[in-house]
Image (cartoon, rainbow, N blue to C red; front, side, top):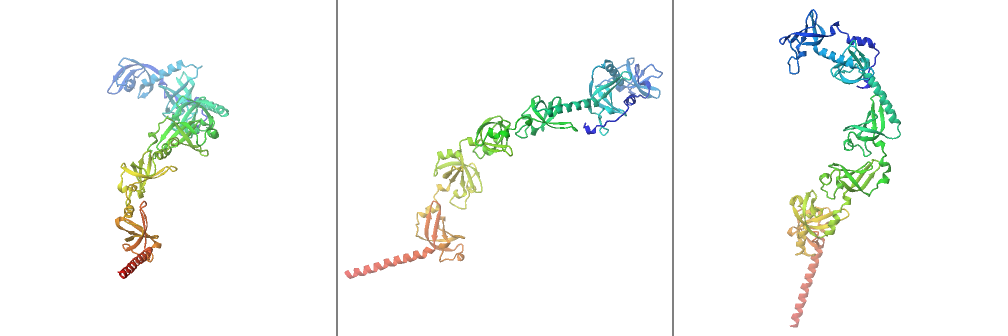
Length: 551
Protein backbone atom coordinates (compact mmCIF):
# COMPACT_ATOMS: atom_id res chain seq x y z
CA UNK A 1 0.00 0.00 0.00
CA UNK A 2 1.44 3.36 -0.99
CA UNK A 3 1.16 6.31 1.35
CA UNK A 4 -0.39 8.44 -1.37
CA UNK A 5 -3.37 6.03 -1.35
CA UNK A 6 -4.03 6.47 2.38
CA UNK A 7 -7.12 8.35 3.50
CA UNK A 8 -7.79 9.45 7.07
CA UNK A 9 -11.27 10.65 7.93
CA UNK A 10 -12.99 11.74 11.14
CA UNK A 11 -15.64 9.18 12.09
CA UNK A 12 -17.45 8.48 15.37
CA UNK A 13 -15.59 5.38 16.51
CA UNK A 14 -18.25 4.13 18.92
CA UNK A 15 -21.07 4.51 16.40
CA UNK A 16 -18.99 2.73 13.79
CA UNK A 17 -18.25 -0.15 16.15
CA UNK A 18 -21.93 -0.48 17.03
CA UNK A 19 -22.90 -0.48 13.34
CA UNK A 20 -20.34 -3.17 12.57
CA UNK A 21 -21.57 -5.57 15.21
CA UNK A 22 -25.28 -4.76 15.15
CA UNK A 23 -27.35 -7.91 14.60
CA UNK A 24 -30.73 -8.28 13.00
CA UNK A 25 -32.22 -9.56 16.26
CA UNK A 26 -31.18 -10.62 19.69
CA UNK A 27 -31.09 -14.25 18.61
CA UNK A 28 -27.42 -14.12 17.81
CA UNK A 29 -26.51 -15.58 21.18
CA UNK A 30 -24.52 -18.75 21.57
CA UNK A 31 -26.89 -21.55 22.64
CA UNK A 32 -26.72 -25.29 23.17
CA UNK A 33 -29.06 -27.55 21.20
CA UNK A 34 -29.85 -31.22 20.66
CA UNK A 35 -29.90 -32.83 17.23
CA UNK A 36 -33.46 -34.20 16.78
CA UNK A 37 -33.33 -35.41 13.18
CA UNK A 38 -30.75 -35.65 10.37
CA UNK A 39 -32.04 -35.65 6.77
CA UNK A 40 -29.43 -36.39 4.13
CA UNK A 41 -32.03 -35.95 1.40
CA UNK A 42 -32.87 -32.41 2.53
CA UNK A 43 -29.21 -31.66 3.41
CA UNK A 44 -30.27 -30.33 6.81
CA UNK A 45 -30.76 -31.26 10.45
CA UNK A 46 -33.40 -30.26 13.01
CA UNK A 47 -32.08 -29.02 16.35
CA UNK A 48 -33.97 -28.43 19.56
CA UNK A 49 -32.62 -25.19 21.05
CA UNK A 50 -35.29 -24.92 23.82
CA UNK A 51 -37.51 -22.51 21.97
CA UNK A 52 -41.04 -22.70 20.66
CA UNK A 53 -39.84 -23.88 17.25
CA UNK A 54 -36.99 -26.21 16.48
CA UNK A 55 -34.06 -24.78 14.52
CA UNK A 56 -32.66 -25.71 11.11
CA UNK A 57 -28.97 -26.24 10.35
CA UNK A 58 -27.50 -27.18 6.98
CA UNK A 59 -25.53 -30.44 6.96
CA UNK A 60 -22.52 -28.92 5.18
CA UNK A 61 -21.51 -27.43 8.54
CA UNK A 62 -21.69 -30.81 10.28
CA UNK A 63 -19.61 -32.81 7.77
CA UNK A 64 -15.89 -33.49 7.96
CA UNK A 65 -13.40 -33.30 5.08
CA UNK A 66 -14.46 -36.63 3.55
CA UNK A 67 -18.15 -35.59 3.47
CA UNK A 68 -19.32 -37.71 6.44
CA UNK A 69 -21.63 -36.16 9.07
CA UNK A 70 -19.66 -35.96 12.32
CA UNK A 71 -22.73 -36.03 14.61
CA UNK A 72 -25.72 -38.30 15.18
CA UNK A 73 -29.26 -37.75 16.43
CA UNK A 74 -29.29 -37.01 20.15
CA UNK A 75 -25.87 -35.27 20.15
CA UNK A 76 -25.65 -31.90 21.81
CA UNK A 77 -23.87 -29.06 19.97
CA UNK A 78 -23.41 -25.34 20.41
CA UNK A 79 -24.87 -23.13 17.71
CA UNK A 80 -25.49 -19.45 16.99
CA UNK A 81 -28.83 -18.19 15.67
CA UNK A 82 -28.20 -16.34 12.41
CA UNK A 83 -31.75 -15.80 11.09
CA UNK A 84 -35.19 -17.30 10.48
CA UNK A 85 -36.95 -19.35 7.82
CA UNK A 86 -40.61 -18.62 8.44
CA UNK A 87 -40.87 -19.12 12.21
CA UNK A 88 -38.04 -21.62 12.38
CA UNK A 89 -34.65 -20.28 13.57
CA UNK A 90 -31.63 -20.90 11.33
CA UNK A 91 -28.48 -21.70 13.28
CA UNK A 92 -24.76 -21.97 12.49
CA UNK A 93 -22.31 -24.45 13.95
CA UNK A 94 -19.33 -22.80 12.21
CA UNK A 95 -20.17 -19.43 13.71
CA UNK A 96 -20.58 -21.02 17.12
CA UNK A 97 -17.10 -22.46 16.87
CA UNK A 98 -15.71 -19.07 15.90
CA UNK A 99 -17.64 -17.46 18.76
CA UNK A 100 -16.31 -20.03 21.19
CA UNK A 101 -12.76 -19.44 19.94
CA UNK A 102 -13.27 -15.69 20.23
CA UNK A 103 -14.61 -16.05 23.78
CA UNK A 104 -11.60 -18.17 24.68
CA UNK A 105 -9.26 -15.57 23.18
CA UNK A 106 -10.99 -12.73 25.03
CA UNK A 107 -10.93 -14.70 28.29
CA UNK A 108 -7.16 -15.13 27.99
CA UNK A 109 -6.55 -11.55 26.80
CA UNK A 110 -4.16 -9.60 29.05
CA UNK A 111 -4.79 -5.87 28.93
CA UNK A 112 -1.28 -5.17 30.20
CA UNK A 113 0.27 -6.81 27.15
CA UNK A 114 0.55 -5.51 23.59
CA UNK A 115 -0.87 -7.79 20.89
CA UNK A 116 0.20 -7.50 17.26
CA UNK A 117 -1.75 -9.81 14.96
CA UNK A 118 -1.39 -10.75 11.31
CA UNK A 119 -4.32 -11.78 9.16
CA UNK A 120 -6.20 -11.40 5.89
CA UNK A 121 -8.87 -8.84 5.09
CA UNK A 122 -11.87 -11.13 4.48
CA UNK A 123 -14.87 -8.79 4.45
CA UNK A 124 -15.83 -5.17 4.04
CA UNK A 125 -18.71 -3.44 5.85
CA UNK A 126 -20.00 0.06 6.35
CA UNK A 127 -17.67 0.90 9.19
CA UNK A 128 -14.51 -0.83 8.03
CA UNK A 129 -13.11 -4.30 7.45
CA UNK A 130 -13.07 -7.76 9.00
CA UNK A 131 -9.59 -9.24 9.43
CA UNK A 132 -9.40 -13.03 9.71
CA UNK A 133 -6.56 -14.14 11.96
CA UNK A 134 -6.44 -17.95 12.04
CA UNK A 135 -10.23 -18.20 12.25
CA UNK A 136 -10.70 -15.27 14.63
CA UNK A 137 -12.48 -12.31 13.06
CA UNK A 138 -11.34 -8.89 14.25
CA UNK A 139 -12.85 -5.57 13.29
CA UNK A 140 -10.62 -2.90 11.72
CA UNK A 141 -12.36 0.51 11.41
CA UNK A 142 -11.70 2.31 8.17
CA UNK A 143 -10.06 5.23 9.98
CA UNK A 144 -7.56 2.80 11.54
CA UNK A 145 -6.91 0.83 8.39
CA UNK A 146 -4.73 3.13 6.24
CA UNK A 147 -6.62 1.67 3.26
CA UNK A 148 -7.90 3.90 0.49
CA UNK A 149 -11.41 3.75 -0.95
CA UNK A 150 -9.74 3.42 -4.34
CA UNK A 151 -8.31 0.00 -3.56
CA UNK A 152 -9.87 -3.42 -3.01
CA UNK A 153 -8.27 -4.85 0.14
CA UNK A 154 -10.08 -8.20 0.16
CA UNK A 155 -7.44 -10.93 0.39
CA UNK A 156 -4.72 -8.48 1.46
CA UNK A 157 -2.48 -9.60 4.31
CA UNK A 158 -2.09 -6.99 7.05
CA UNK A 159 -0.46 -6.55 10.44
CA UNK A 160 -2.41 -4.69 13.08
CA UNK A 161 -2.38 -3.82 16.77
CA UNK A 162 -5.27 -4.80 19.08
CA UNK A 163 -6.60 -1.51 20.45
CA UNK A 164 -9.91 -2.57 22.09
CA UNK A 165 -11.53 -5.76 23.41
CA UNK A 166 -15.26 -5.75 24.24
CA UNK A 167 -16.11 -8.81 26.33
CA UNK A 168 -19.85 -8.06 26.35
CA UNK A 169 -20.13 -8.07 22.56
CA UNK A 170 -17.27 -10.59 22.09
CA UNK A 171 -15.58 -8.19 19.70
CA UNK A 172 -11.99 -7.14 19.11
CA UNK A 173 -10.90 -3.92 17.38
CA UNK A 174 -7.51 -3.68 15.65
CA UNK A 175 -5.53 -0.79 14.15
CA UNK A 176 -3.17 -0.97 11.20
CA UNK A 177 -2.66 2.78 11.37
CA UNK A 178 -1.02 2.54 14.77
CA UNK A 179 1.68 0.14 13.53
CA UNK A 180 2.30 2.14 10.35
CA UNK A 181 2.65 5.38 12.29
CA UNK A 182 5.04 3.71 14.70
CA UNK A 183 7.03 2.23 11.83
CA UNK A 184 7.09 5.54 10.00
CA UNK A 185 8.38 7.34 13.07
CA UNK A 186 10.98 4.62 13.66
CA UNK A 187 12.13 4.71 10.04
CA UNK A 188 12.50 8.48 10.02
CA UNK A 189 14.49 8.34 13.25
CA UNK A 190 16.82 5.67 11.87
CA UNK A 191 17.17 7.51 8.55
CA UNK A 192 18.09 10.67 10.43
CA UNK A 193 20.75 8.78 12.38
CA UNK A 194 22.21 7.22 9.22
CA UNK A 195 22.19 10.49 7.28
CA UNK A 196 23.99 12.32 10.08
CA UNK A 197 26.57 9.56 10.57
CA UNK A 198 30.08 10.64 9.54
CA UNK A 199 31.29 7.05 9.28
CA UNK A 200 29.74 4.13 7.36
CA UNK A 201 27.16 2.09 9.26
CA UNK A 202 26.95 -1.70 9.48
CA UNK A 203 24.07 -3.48 7.80
CA UNK A 204 23.02 -7.06 7.15
CA UNK A 205 22.22 -8.41 3.70
CA UNK A 206 18.58 -9.53 3.85
CA UNK A 207 17.75 -10.35 0.22
CA UNK A 208 19.70 -10.49 -3.05
CA UNK A 209 18.05 -9.75 -6.39
CA UNK A 210 19.20 -9.31 -9.98
CA UNK A 211 19.13 -5.52 -9.63
CA UNK A 212 20.80 -5.23 -6.22
CA UNK A 213 20.27 -6.28 -2.64
CA UNK A 214 18.30 -5.20 0.41
CA UNK A 215 20.31 -4.40 3.50
CA UNK A 216 18.88 -4.11 7.03
CA UNK A 217 20.27 -1.09 8.87
CA UNK A 218 18.90 -0.61 12.36
CA UNK A 219 15.64 -2.41 11.62
CA UNK A 220 14.75 -0.93 8.24
CA UNK A 221 15.63 -2.22 4.79
CA UNK A 222 17.45 -0.14 2.21
CA UNK A 223 18.29 -0.98 -1.38
CA UNK A 224 21.88 -1.15 -2.59
CA UNK A 225 21.59 -0.98 -6.37
CA UNK A 226 24.01 -3.23 -8.27
CA UNK A 227 25.77 -0.10 -9.57
CA UNK A 228 26.46 1.00 -5.98
CA UNK A 229 28.21 -2.16 -4.84
CA UNK A 230 31.69 -1.77 -6.31
CA UNK A 231 33.93 0.88 -7.83
CA UNK A 232 34.47 -1.61 -10.65
CA UNK A 233 31.06 -0.70 -12.03
CA UNK A 234 27.76 -2.63 -12.13
CA UNK A 235 28.27 -6.14 -10.71
CA UNK A 236 26.17 -9.20 -9.93
CA UNK A 237 25.68 -9.01 -6.14
CA UNK A 238 25.26 -12.77 -5.77
CA UNK A 239 28.90 -13.21 -6.86
CA UNK A 240 30.16 -11.08 -4.00
CA UNK A 241 27.71 -11.50 -1.11
CA UNK A 242 25.42 -13.99 0.62
CA UNK A 243 22.29 -13.34 2.66
CA UNK A 244 23.34 -12.72 6.25
CA UNK A 245 26.64 -11.03 5.36
CA UNK A 246 27.50 -7.83 7.19
CA UNK A 247 28.42 -4.87 4.98
CA UNK A 248 29.42 -1.24 5.48
CA UNK A 249 27.04 1.22 3.82
CA UNK A 250 26.30 4.92 3.47
CA UNK A 251 22.93 6.52 2.79
CA UNK A 252 22.42 8.06 -0.63
CA UNK A 253 18.78 9.16 -0.47
CA UNK A 254 15.45 8.67 1.31
CA UNK A 255 12.11 9.14 -0.43
CA UNK A 256 9.64 10.03 2.35
CA UNK A 257 6.62 9.63 0.12
CA UNK A 258 7.56 6.16 -1.08
CA UNK A 259 9.62 5.31 2.01
CA UNK A 260 12.49 4.12 -0.17
CA UNK A 261 15.93 4.13 1.41
CA UNK A 262 18.85 4.06 -1.04
CA UNK A 263 22.21 2.85 0.25
CA UNK A 264 25.70 2.48 -1.21
CA UNK A 265 28.51 0.10 -0.38
CA UNK A 266 31.09 1.65 -2.68
CA UNK A 267 30.55 5.09 -1.12
CA UNK A 268 31.55 3.57 2.21
CA UNK A 269 35.08 2.91 0.90
CA UNK A 270 37.68 5.07 -0.81
CA UNK A 271 37.66 5.16 -4.61
CA UNK A 272 40.80 3.38 -5.85
CA UNK A 273 40.75 5.53 -9.00
CA UNK A 274 41.60 8.56 -6.87
CA UNK A 275 45.00 7.01 -6.17
CA UNK A 276 45.41 4.85 -9.26
CA UNK A 277 48.81 6.42 -10.11
CA UNK A 278 50.13 5.22 -6.76
CA UNK A 279 48.85 1.70 -7.33
CA UNK A 280 49.79 0.75 -10.91
CA UNK A 281 51.16 2.12 -14.17
CA UNK A 282 51.31 0.96 -17.78
CA UNK A 283 53.93 -1.76 -18.20
CA UNK A 284 53.53 -3.21 -14.70
CA UNK A 285 53.25 -6.96 -14.33
CA UNK A 286 50.67 -7.91 -11.69
CA UNK A 287 48.88 -11.02 -10.45
CA UNK A 288 45.10 -11.05 -10.96
CA UNK A 289 42.19 -13.46 -10.51
CA UNK A 290 39.87 -14.41 -13.37
CA UNK A 291 36.39 -13.26 -12.24
CA UNK A 292 34.26 -13.62 -15.37
CA UNK A 293 34.69 -15.12 -18.85
CA UNK A 294 32.84 -13.91 -21.94
CA UNK A 295 33.27 -14.89 -25.62
CA UNK A 296 34.92 -11.53 -26.32
CA UNK A 297 37.33 -11.53 -23.38
CA UNK A 298 37.94 -12.00 -19.66
CA UNK A 299 37.38 -9.77 -16.63
CA UNK A 300 40.06 -10.02 -13.97
CA UNK A 301 40.09 -8.84 -10.36
CA UNK A 302 43.11 -6.77 -9.30
CA UNK A 303 42.07 -6.35 -5.67
CA UNK A 304 41.73 -2.82 -4.26
CA UNK A 305 38.17 -2.92 -5.72
CA UNK A 306 39.64 -2.70 -9.24
CA UNK A 307 38.77 -4.77 -12.28
CA UNK A 308 40.51 -4.97 -15.67
CA UNK A 309 39.57 -6.36 -19.05
CA UNK A 310 41.65 -8.94 -20.90
CA UNK A 311 40.52 -8.89 -24.52
CA UNK A 312 40.43 -12.20 -26.37
CA UNK A 313 43.16 -10.91 -28.71
CA UNK A 314 45.47 -10.38 -25.71
CA UNK A 315 45.21 -13.92 -24.33
CA UNK A 316 47.53 -15.72 -26.74
CA UNK A 317 49.77 -15.06 -29.73
CA UNK A 318 47.63 -17.62 -31.51
CA UNK A 319 45.27 -15.59 -33.71
CA UNK A 320 42.71 -18.40 -33.82
CA UNK A 321 41.50 -18.24 -30.20
CA UNK A 322 37.89 -19.44 -30.46
CA UNK A 323 36.83 -18.85 -26.83
CA UNK A 324 38.73 -17.61 -23.75
CA UNK A 325 37.38 -20.53 -21.70
CA UNK A 326 39.67 -22.81 -23.70
CA UNK A 327 42.61 -21.04 -22.06
CA UNK A 328 41.40 -19.75 -18.68
CA UNK A 329 38.99 -20.68 -15.85
CA UNK A 330 37.08 -18.56 -13.33
CA UNK A 331 39.05 -18.26 -10.08
CA UNK A 332 42.41 -18.89 -11.73
CA UNK A 333 45.32 -16.65 -10.73
CA UNK A 334 47.40 -15.37 -13.65
CA UNK A 335 50.10 -12.78 -14.32
CA UNK A 336 49.27 -9.99 -16.77
CA UNK A 337 50.79 -6.75 -18.01
CA UNK A 338 48.98 -3.40 -17.72
CA UNK A 339 48.63 -2.03 -21.27
CA UNK A 340 46.12 0.80 -20.78
CA UNK A 341 44.84 2.99 -17.92
CA UNK A 342 41.82 5.10 -18.93
CA UNK A 343 41.25 7.43 -15.98
CA UNK A 344 38.42 9.34 -17.62
CA UNK A 345 36.28 6.25 -18.23
CA UNK A 346 37.77 4.30 -15.31
CA UNK A 347 38.86 1.37 -17.46
CA UNK A 348 41.90 -0.88 -17.29
CA UNK A 349 43.17 -3.17 -20.05
CA UNK A 350 45.71 -5.93 -19.53
CA UNK A 351 47.55 -8.45 -21.68
CA UNK A 352 48.52 -12.03 -21.00
CA UNK A 353 50.30 -12.74 -24.28
CA UNK A 354 52.86 -9.96 -23.72
CA UNK A 355 54.32 -12.05 -20.90
CA UNK A 356 54.52 -15.13 -23.11
CA UNK A 357 57.40 -15.92 -25.55
CA UNK A 358 56.78 -14.19 -28.87
CA UNK A 359 56.26 -16.87 -31.54
CA UNK A 360 57.98 -14.82 -34.24
CA UNK A 361 61.16 -14.70 -32.14
CA UNK A 362 61.05 -18.46 -31.61
CA UNK A 363 60.45 -18.97 -35.30
CA UNK A 364 63.20 -16.64 -36.48
CA UNK A 365 65.74 -18.32 -34.22
CA UNK A 366 64.87 -21.72 -35.64
CA UNK A 367 64.41 -20.74 -39.30
CA UNK A 368 65.89 -18.37 -41.85
CA UNK A 369 64.94 -16.81 -45.17
CA UNK A 370 65.34 -19.39 -47.91
CA UNK A 371 64.51 -22.37 -45.66
CA UNK A 372 62.10 -24.93 -47.09
CA UNK A 373 59.54 -26.20 -44.54
CA UNK A 374 56.18 -27.94 -44.44
CA UNK A 375 53.01 -26.45 -42.97
CA UNK A 376 49.23 -26.86 -42.74
CA UNK A 377 46.78 -24.57 -44.54
CA UNK A 378 44.64 -23.00 -41.76
CA UNK A 379 42.53 -20.58 -43.81
CA UNK A 380 42.09 -19.34 -47.37
CA UNK A 381 41.22 -15.73 -48.25
CA UNK A 382 40.74 -13.71 -51.42
CA UNK A 383 44.36 -12.62 -51.33
CA UNK A 384 46.01 -15.90 -50.41
CA UNK A 385 46.29 -18.63 -47.78
CA UNK A 386 47.58 -18.77 -44.20
CA UNK A 387 49.85 -21.68 -43.47
CA UNK A 388 50.78 -22.86 -39.96
CA UNK A 389 54.53 -23.31 -40.00
CA UNK A 390 55.93 -24.21 -36.61
CA UNK A 391 54.68 -21.77 -33.96
CA UNK A 392 53.50 -19.07 -36.39
CA UNK A 393 51.20 -18.60 -39.34
CA UNK A 394 52.78 -17.45 -42.55
CA UNK A 395 51.08 -15.83 -45.52
CA UNK A 396 51.23 -17.55 -48.88
CA UNK A 397 50.08 -14.77 -51.18
CA UNK A 398 48.27 -15.58 -54.41
CA UNK A 399 51.28 -14.19 -56.31
CA UNK A 400 53.47 -16.80 -54.64
CA UNK A 401 51.33 -19.90 -55.09
CA UNK A 402 52.06 -20.49 -58.81
CA UNK A 403 54.02 -19.08 -61.74
CA UNK A 404 50.72 -19.07 -63.58
CA UNK A 405 49.42 -15.59 -62.84
CA UNK A 406 45.80 -16.69 -63.34
CA UNK A 407 45.94 -19.26 -60.54
CA UNK A 408 45.01 -18.36 -56.92
CA UNK A 409 45.50 -20.26 -53.66
CA UNK A 410 41.83 -21.21 -53.42
CA UNK A 411 42.18 -22.94 -56.81
CA UNK A 412 44.85 -25.39 -55.69
CA UNK A 413 44.72 -25.67 -51.86
CA UNK A 414 42.25 -26.83 -49.20
CA UNK A 415 42.11 -26.02 -45.47
CA UNK A 416 43.93 -28.73 -43.53
CA UNK A 417 46.15 -29.68 -46.46
CA UNK A 418 49.89 -30.03 -45.88
CA UNK A 419 52.06 -27.99 -48.23
CA UNK A 420 55.77 -27.51 -48.74
CA UNK A 421 56.81 -23.86 -48.93
CA UNK A 422 59.87 -21.66 -48.96
CA UNK A 423 60.39 -18.81 -46.46
CA UNK A 424 60.92 -15.62 -48.48
CA UNK A 425 60.69 -13.05 -45.65
CA UNK A 426 60.63 -12.88 -41.82
CA UNK A 427 59.43 -9.56 -40.34
CA UNK A 428 60.06 -9.78 -36.58
CA UNK A 429 58.85 -6.21 -35.95
CA UNK A 430 55.39 -6.83 -37.35
CA UNK A 431 55.38 -10.58 -36.62
CA UNK A 432 54.88 -11.54 -40.25
CA UNK A 433 56.24 -14.45 -42.25
CA UNK A 434 55.97 -14.53 -46.05
CA UNK A 435 55.96 -17.87 -47.85
CA UNK A 436 56.21 -19.04 -51.45
CA UNK A 437 55.21 -22.23 -53.21
CA UNK A 438 56.33 -21.21 -56.68
CA UNK A 439 59.83 -20.49 -55.39
CA UNK A 440 60.30 -24.27 -55.16
CA UNK A 441 59.57 -24.64 -58.86
CA UNK A 442 61.53 -23.51 -61.92
CA UNK A 443 60.07 -20.31 -63.28
CA UNK A 444 59.12 -20.07 -66.96
CA UNK A 445 61.58 -17.19 -67.23
CA UNK A 446 64.31 -19.41 -65.80
CA UNK A 447 63.62 -22.08 -68.39
CA UNK A 448 63.51 -19.42 -71.09
CA UNK A 449 66.86 -17.97 -69.97
CA UNK A 450 68.55 -21.33 -70.53
CA UNK A 451 67.95 -21.10 -74.27
CA UNK A 452 67.97 -17.34 -74.81
CA UNK A 453 70.18 -14.37 -73.99
CA UNK A 454 70.04 -10.60 -74.24
CA UNK A 455 70.37 -9.43 -77.84
CA UNK A 456 68.42 -12.34 -79.31
CA UNK A 457 65.74 -11.36 -81.78
CA UNK A 458 62.36 -12.80 -80.74
CA UNK A 459 58.85 -12.71 -82.08
CA UNK A 460 55.66 -12.75 -79.99
CA UNK A 461 51.91 -12.13 -80.15
CA UNK A 462 50.37 -9.06 -78.46
CA UNK A 463 48.65 -10.35 -75.31
CA UNK A 464 47.74 -7.16 -73.46
CA UNK A 465 48.10 -3.39 -73.75
CA UNK A 466 48.77 -1.07 -70.81
CA UNK A 467 49.50 2.63 -70.48
CA UNK A 468 53.14 1.83 -69.84
CA UNK A 469 53.59 -0.71 -72.66
CA UNK A 470 52.62 -3.92 -74.40
CA UNK A 471 52.88 -7.55 -73.22
CA UNK A 472 53.69 -10.13 -75.89
CA UNK A 473 53.37 -13.90 -75.45
CA UNK A 474 56.53 -15.86 -76.27
CA UNK A 475 57.25 -19.57 -76.43
CA UNK A 476 56.97 -21.82 -73.35
CA UNK A 477 54.19 -19.69 -71.91
CA UNK A 478 56.35 -16.70 -70.95
CA UNK A 479 55.46 -13.05 -71.49
CA UNK A 480 57.73 -10.14 -72.35
CA UNK A 481 57.09 -6.46 -71.73
CA UNK A 482 57.86 -3.86 -74.38
CA UNK A 483 57.80 -0.45 -72.73
CA UNK A 484 56.11 2.45 -74.48
CA UNK A 485 59.46 4.16 -75.11
CA UNK A 486 60.81 0.95 -76.66
CA UNK A 487 57.96 0.52 -79.22
CA UNK A 488 59.36 3.03 -81.77
CA UNK A 489 58.87 3.04 -84.69
CA UNK A 490 55.57 1.27 -83.88
CA UNK A 491 52.63 3.37 -82.67
CA UNK A 492 50.82 2.18 -79.54
CA UNK A 493 47.42 3.20 -80.92
CA UNK A 494 47.97 1.13 -84.07
CA UNK A 495 48.89 -2.06 -82.25
CA UNK A 496 46.11 -4.67 -81.90
CA UNK A 497 45.85 -7.74 -79.64
CA UNK A 498 46.94 -10.88 -81.46
CA UNK A 499 49.30 -8.92 -83.69
CA UNK A 500 52.77 -10.38 -84.16
CA UNK A 501 55.73 -8.19 -83.15
CA UNK A 502 59.46 -8.70 -83.52
CA UNK A 503 61.76 -7.28 -80.84
CA UNK A 504 65.16 -7.71 -79.19
CA UNK A 505 65.61 -9.24 -75.71
CA UNK A 506 67.04 -6.58 -73.39
CA UNK A 507 66.41 -7.98 -69.86
CA UNK A 508 65.78 -11.43 -68.30
CA UNK A 509 65.17 -11.85 -64.51
CA UNK A 510 64.43 -15.55 -63.84
CA UNK A 511 63.84 -15.03 -60.09
CA UNK A 512 61.10 -12.46 -60.59
CA UNK A 513 59.86 -14.03 -63.81
CA UNK A 514 60.40 -10.80 -65.79
CA UNK A 515 61.44 -10.41 -69.43
CA UNK A 516 61.73 -7.16 -71.36
CA UNK A 517 62.16 -6.59 -75.08
CA UNK A 518 62.62 -3.57 -77.35
CA UNK A 519 61.39 -2.86 -80.91
CA UNK A 520 63.40 0.34 -80.90
CA UNK A 521 66.65 -1.62 -80.58
CA UNK A 522 65.56 -4.07 -83.24
CA UNK A 523 66.51 -1.71 -86.10
CA UNK A 524 69.88 -0.98 -84.52
CA UNK A 525 70.40 -4.71 -84.01
CA UNK A 526 69.58 -5.42 -87.63
CA UNK A 527 71.93 -2.63 -88.79
CA UNK A 528 74.76 -3.99 -86.66
CA UNK A 529 74.13 -7.49 -87.90
CA UNK A 530 74.10 -6.30 -91.54
CA UNK A 531 77.29 -4.33 -91.08
CA UNK A 532 78.91 -7.29 -89.40
CA UNK A 533 77.79 -9.56 -92.17
CA UNK A 534 78.98 -7.12 -94.83
CA UNK A 535 82.34 -6.78 -93.11
CA UNK A 536 82.71 -10.53 -93.03
CA UNK A 537 81.80 -10.81 -96.74
CA UNK A 538 84.31 -8.04 -97.77
CA UNK A 539 87.13 -9.62 -95.84
CA UNK A 540 86.53 -12.91 -97.53
CA UNK A 541 86.62 -11.33 -101.02
CA UNK A 542 89.97 -9.50 -100.42
CA UNK A 543 91.47 -12.63 -99.00
CA UNK A 544 90.41 -14.63 -101.94
CA UNK A 545 91.85 -12.03 -104.33
CA UNK A 546 95.22 -12.01 -102.58
CA UNK A 547 95.27 -15.76 -102.54
CA UNK A 548 94.68 -15.84 -106.26
CA UNK A 549 97.47 -13.29 -106.86
CA UNK A 550 99.99 -15.34 -104.89
CA UNK A 551 99.29 -18.46 -106.86
